Every structure is written in C-alpha cells, then in structure tokens.
Image (tube, rainbow, N blue to C red; front, side):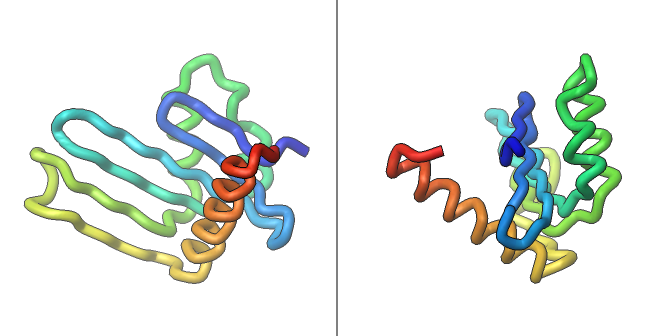
Length: 109
C-alpha cells in the first residue's frame, strides 16, 4: 500500500506500525502560515486524490478529527496560536513524520 498521498496544500500518511492514518493541510502565503493536522479514517485516506478539484480533498480531510492547528497570519491571530485536540494522535503523527524524513535523508522510500 502506498504510504503517502499529496495534493497542493495537503499530505496524507499511513503509519504501518500503528495502523493509523493522518493528514495535514498547510497554507503558506506572504501574509503568514496556517497548519491543520487530522487523524483520518482508512475510508477517507482511500478516497483522497480521487476528486478533480483539490478543494474537495481538503473538504474531505476536514470531516475528520483535528489533532493540531497553528495559525500565524496577518488576518488571524496576533501571534502563534496552538490548539491540540488529541495529544496522543498528534504525537504518533509527529513520530511517523520524523521517521519518514529520516528515511528520505538516507535515500530510502
């Protein structure tokens, strides 16, 4: 099974060790940065990438449980705002992403 899916502003991951699925949506512009992380279901993961419009993929991701959000924009908060809804899910996602980045740096897939 493919362990990662990508769109313009989103990336979805499957962690085979925990058998859990995660997705992140990141918006970056000169006005600032926003990041939203979700724990998604297998059904959502399987449907990602099947839509013609990437906005529909993001809308599907947003139906899942949010685990983390960060906003630092001119139009949003005055400074960074962090909300962790599910600390355990957020921690699992972060560990998987570190492990993935380490493999990429070593030239593996």
